[in-house]
Length: 380
Image 1 (cartoon, rainbow, N blue to C red):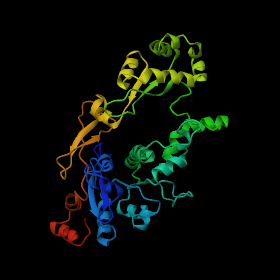
Image 2 (image 1 turned 30 degrees about the horizontal axis):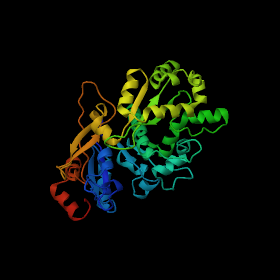
Image 3 (image 1 turned 90 degrees about the vertical axis):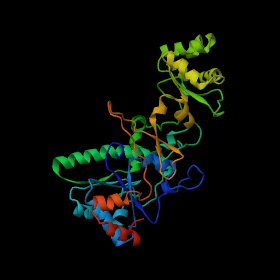
Image 4 (image 1 turned 45 degrees about the vertical axis):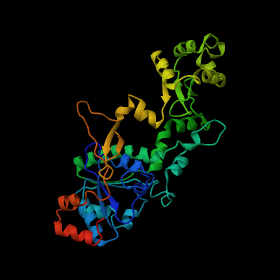
C-alpha cells in the first residue's frame, strides 16, 4: 500500500525490536537499518517507536488510530484485545475504521492459539506435500511463502472494505489468515482429488500437459558450478523444432513423436536433454530456444537477476540509508507499472525516524510534550 502512495505508519515497539530489526547487515553483524527483509517490506513506510506498556504510549497510539482509515495487525488472535486495542475499542475511536487481522490461523478454529511460522503453514496447507520429486520426501521452497502471499490478498481485501465504507459508511473487521491464503493457491489440486479420489503426486518440475517440461543442468559459470536452464515444450510442433536441435537420432525417435509417447518415455527423454544442455551456457540455450519459439529461461541466481539479466535489472531501485551512505541498497519495485508515471520508492525508515513528524505533525503535540515523552520513555 505504501508503494501505491498510501501513508503507512509502522508502529514499532521501543522496548522489543522485531526480528526484521535484528537481521544481519552487510558487515556480518545485526543492523536495525540494513537487514535485507526490513529494506524489502518496509519501503515507503513511516516508523513510530513507542512503548505500548505505558499508559501514555497506548494513549498515543489510540490518538493515531483515530486519524486512520485502516489498522493492520499480524499478531495471534486476541493479542489486540489484550493490549486494549480490540475492534470495539477502535470503533469508539473511529466508527468507520477498517481492522484487518492477519494471523496464521482463524481465531475460531482449533489452531487459534498455536504459534505459526511460514514453514509450519506451508506444511499444514498441503503445499509441501505436493512439492518435491516423486518417491522422495516433501520439500519446502526455500522462502516463507505465506508471508508474501497474504499481503497481496490483503491489498485487494482492504480496497474492497474501503469501497464498502465509502458507499455505506460502515467500517469492517476482517480476518485474513495466512493458512487460508496458502490453501487458496491449491484449487486445481483439490478439484483433482475431489473428482478422482486420488492424491496428487509430487511431480518435481514436470507438468501433466507439457513434455518435456523441466530444469536441466548447464555449463558452470563464473558465479557458480550450480547452473541450470528451464525448458517447456507445449505442442508437438514445438517438439519437432526443439528435437531438430538435439540431433537426428532424437528427432526421428518414435518414442517421442507425440505428447502421450513423450510422457510415457519421459525419463529417457530427460536424460537425452540433459546430455545436450550440460556442456552449454544456460543463457545461450535459453536464447536459442526462445528464438525458435520454444519457452526457455536460465535458472537465475540472485547475482544474475541483479547484474546480468537486462530485463530484471530494471526491477530494482537503488536507495540509500543515512546510517550507511557508503552502501547502495537494491530494493525490488512493485510488479505493477502505471504507463506514463515514473514511480519512485522511498527507503525503509530507521526505528522511530518519524516520531516527531507523527506526534507533533499529525497529532498536534507541542515540542515540549514531545520532549517529555522522550524523557518518560514513551517514545524510543
